Amino acid sequence: MVRIFEIDLDREKIFVQDEWLALDELSARLRDKIDQQDFADLSVLSEALERLQTVLSEAHEMTIRVTREVADSYRTIAEKSGEPLEQILRRVLSNYLTSADASQYLFDGAAEPPVTPPPAGGGLTSLADLEAGDPGSAAPAAEPASEDG
Image (tube, rainbow, N blue to C red):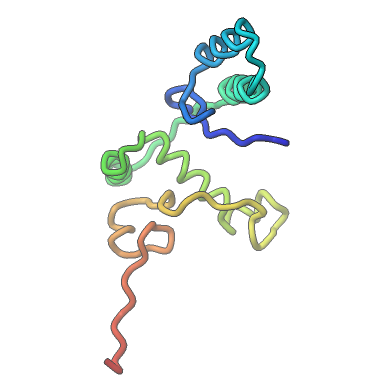
Protein backbone atom coordinates (compact mmCIF):
# COMPACT_ATOMS: atom_id res chain seq x y z
CA MET A 1 0.00 0.00 0.00
CA VAL A 2 1.37 3.37 -1.01
CA ARG A 3 0.69 6.08 1.51
CA ILE A 4 0.13 9.66 0.44
CA PHE A 5 1.67 12.30 2.67
CA GLU A 6 1.13 16.03 2.61
CA ILE A 7 4.46 17.85 2.24
CA ASP A 8 5.19 21.49 2.99
CA LEU A 9 8.05 22.36 0.65
CA ASP A 10 8.53 25.79 2.21
CA ARG A 11 9.08 24.46 5.73
CA GLU A 12 10.56 21.16 4.50
CA LYS A 13 8.17 19.13 6.63
CA ILE A 14 5.82 16.21 6.12
CA PHE A 15 2.47 15.57 7.80
CA VAL A 16 2.57 12.18 9.49
CA GLN A 17 0.74 10.85 12.54
CA ASP A 18 -1.19 14.11 12.99
CA GLU A 19 1.84 16.40 13.10
CA TRP A 20 4.32 18.17 10.85
CA LEU A 21 7.84 16.73 11.09
CA ALA A 22 11.16 17.72 9.51
CA LEU A 23 13.83 15.24 8.42
CA ASP A 24 15.73 15.46 11.69
CA GLU A 25 12.54 15.08 13.71
CA LEU A 26 11.55 11.97 11.74
CA SER A 27 15.01 10.48 12.19
CA ALA A 28 14.92 11.14 15.93
CA ARG A 29 11.43 9.66 16.20
CA LEU A 30 12.58 6.51 14.40
CA ARG A 31 15.69 6.17 16.61
CA ASP A 32 13.60 6.64 19.78
CA LYS A 33 11.13 3.97 18.72
CA ILE A 34 13.91 1.51 17.92
CA ASP A 35 15.74 2.26 21.19
CA GLN A 36 12.50 1.66 23.11
CA GLN A 37 11.80 -1.46 21.04
CA ASP A 38 8.48 0.08 20.04
CA PHE A 39 8.13 -1.21 16.51
CA ALA A 40 4.59 0.03 15.95
CA ASP A 41 4.35 2.54 13.11
CA LEU A 42 8.02 2.18 12.15
CA SER A 43 7.04 1.53 8.55
CA VAL A 44 4.91 4.69 8.43
CA LEU A 45 7.69 6.85 9.85
CA SER A 46 10.29 5.23 7.63
CA GLU A 47 8.16 5.70 4.54
CA ALA A 48 7.50 9.34 5.48
CA LEU A 49 11.23 9.96 5.96
CA GLU A 50 12.05 8.39 2.61
CA ARG A 51 9.28 10.33 0.85
CA LEU A 52 10.34 13.67 2.34
CA GLN A 53 13.99 13.05 1.43
CA THR A 54 13.00 12.18 -2.14
CA VAL A 55 10.68 15.13 -2.63
CA LEU A 56 13.17 17.62 -1.20
CA SER A 57 16.05 16.23 -3.26
CA GLU A 58 13.98 16.34 -6.45
CA ALA A 59 12.37 19.77 -5.89
CA HIS A 60 13.21 22.40 -8.48
CA GLU A 61 13.18 26.15 -8.10
CA MET A 62 11.58 28.19 -10.85
CA THR A 63 11.81 31.91 -11.42
CA ILE A 64 9.19 33.78 -13.38
CA ARG A 65 8.42 37.41 -14.12
CA VAL A 66 4.88 38.73 -13.86
CA THR A 67 3.26 42.14 -13.98
CA ARG A 68 2.93 44.13 -10.78
CA GLU A 69 -0.87 43.67 -10.85
CA VAL A 70 -0.55 39.89 -11.04
CA ALA A 71 2.10 39.80 -8.28
CA ASP A 72 0.04 42.09 -6.05
CA SER A 73 -3.06 39.98 -6.62
CA TYR A 74 -1.33 36.76 -5.63
CA ARG A 75 0.27 38.41 -2.61
CA THR A 76 -3.18 39.59 -1.51
CA ILE A 77 -4.60 36.09 -1.95
CA ALA A 78 -1.72 34.60 0.04
CA GLU A 79 -2.09 37.17 2.80
CA LYS A 80 -5.86 36.72 3.11
CA SER A 81 -5.70 32.92 2.91
CA GLY A 82 -2.82 32.64 5.36
CA GLU A 83 -0.94 30.41 2.93
CA PRO A 84 2.61 31.09 1.72
CA LEU A 85 2.75 32.81 -1.65
CA GLU A 86 4.81 29.92 -2.98
CA GLN A 87 2.04 27.46 -2.09
CA ILE A 88 -0.53 29.57 -3.93
CA LEU A 89 1.72 29.67 -7.00
CA ARG A 90 2.28 25.89 -6.87
CA ARG A 91 -1.50 25.44 -6.81
CA VAL A 92 -1.83 27.70 -9.85
CA LEU A 93 0.75 25.66 -11.73
CA SER A 94 -0.98 22.42 -10.73
CA ASN A 95 -4.33 23.78 -11.91
CA TYR A 96 -2.86 24.54 -15.30
CA LEU A 97 -1.40 21.05 -15.57
CA THR A 98 -4.90 19.62 -15.15
CA SER A 99 -6.41 21.89 -17.81
CA ALA A 100 -7.48 20.75 -21.26
CA ASP A 101 -5.07 23.34 -22.65
CA ALA A 102 -2.06 21.66 -21.01
CA SER A 103 -3.32 18.14 -21.64
CA GLN A 104 -2.90 18.56 -25.38
CA TYR A 105 0.84 18.74 -24.78
CA LEU A 106 1.13 16.31 -21.89
CA PHE A 107 -1.35 13.55 -22.68
CA ASP A 108 -1.26 13.12 -26.46
CA GLY A 109 -4.19 15.43 -27.12
CA ALA A 110 -6.53 13.90 -24.55
CA ALA A 111 -9.62 16.05 -24.13
CA GLU A 112 -9.57 15.54 -20.38
CA PRO A 113 -6.38 15.30 -18.34
CA PRO A 114 -6.08 11.97 -16.50
CA VAL A 115 -5.41 13.61 -13.12
CA THR A 116 -7.63 14.95 -10.39
CA PRO A 117 -7.57 18.74 -10.31
CA PRO A 118 -6.48 20.44 -7.09
CA PRO A 119 -8.97 22.49 -5.07
CA ALA A 120 -10.52 25.45 -6.88
CA GLY A 121 -8.99 28.86 -6.47
CA GLY A 122 -5.49 28.29 -7.76
CA GLY A 123 -6.17 29.57 -11.27
CA LEU A 124 -6.67 33.23 -10.50
CA THR A 125 -4.54 35.65 -12.42
CA SER A 126 -5.77 38.72 -10.55
CA LEU A 127 -8.38 39.82 -8.05
CA ALA A 128 -10.31 41.28 -10.97
CA ASP A 129 -10.75 37.72 -12.28
CA LEU A 130 -12.25 36.68 -8.95
CA GLU A 131 -14.60 39.63 -8.87
CA ALA A 132 -15.62 39.11 -12.50
CA GLY A 133 -16.27 35.40 -12.00
CA ASP A 134 -13.62 34.31 -14.50
CA PRO A 135 -13.96 30.56 -15.26
CA GLY A 136 -10.56 29.95 -13.70
CA SER A 137 -11.45 31.73 -10.49
CA ALA A 138 -12.54 30.33 -7.17
CA ALA A 139 -15.92 32.05 -7.09
CA PRO A 140 -18.13 32.17 -10.17
CA ALA A 141 -20.15 35.30 -10.81
CA ALA A 142 -23.70 35.26 -9.57
CA GLU A 143 -26.25 34.12 -12.11
CA PRO A 144 -28.30 36.99 -13.52
CA ALA A 145 -31.84 37.17 -12.20
CA SER A 146 -34.38 35.67 -14.56
CA GLU A 147 -36.82 37.98 -16.23
CA ASP A 148 -39.67 35.72 -15.10
CA GLY A 149 -39.15 37.06 -11.62
